[in-house]
Image: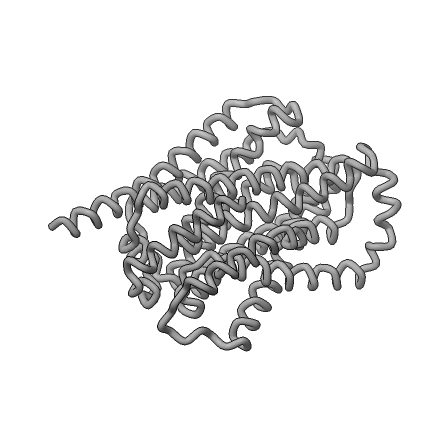
Length: 372
């Protein structure tokens, strides 16, 4: 991860030296911003790394979260806490990036005040905390297939918010991608769930449904707000800015969730929960620790994609991971492999390729324009 950060910083610093006017292009049009960037093979490699972080982080975290509930875990606040609480592992990377960019970066615009920065981190952090809690409740009260289906709606919410907040333009390839990815996730509702979550009382289904829909809307809004902050407020092209968003946002969210954990009194029953965990105490701790690490890996990829491309593309990659989880469950939890899972996976890959092709076409058109 340290080598990836160094590569990111080197790539961004080269971009700034070649065209410092990129920092001032804040018209909200994410397509225009990305087209004007020089997309070398290093840029595409960086996007591949970010994409892998999103897919691997989200898939591992979701599977571990399901395992936590299936083997005796029942604390919604602990399941919520592990989502942002792993941010300390990024602090060494953050300070390494901060030291390097302090000595090399020059910028003509006035940086935002401490008050504005604090407001950004607090708003995004509180929104993240609420979103994590709602997702935890949805995963607790819904079968994995139904949960995955509803989570796919975050793409539609994000597209709506991106249109108004980020001036997102929709080309035929992007619309095709959104439709295919939504269909790929929708198909999962037609498979029988074998995760063991069918034992949830039926009275909890409406709660899980409402929480997951609200979480999907909140996540879509949070992605669009993050891109808005990059373009209109922060206006810097350094990896330090990406880490600032991740670390400070997660720090605020962790504090908010800790308050909820102690206020609810659930902390008193954690010893009993650990004792009764089917896989043992060591497995209980390992599941929570690795879930926290997986979510931080996901955060680096998601925020990096927002920074480099757009919030909608970041959400496209996140949605691509939804049908991956049931396929991985075939190998990890011995779930049966069905035709629906295979079709869902194919549609998801098709949608992803469609979106990537749009950016490839933009890049070719940009190069042709420069030659002309």
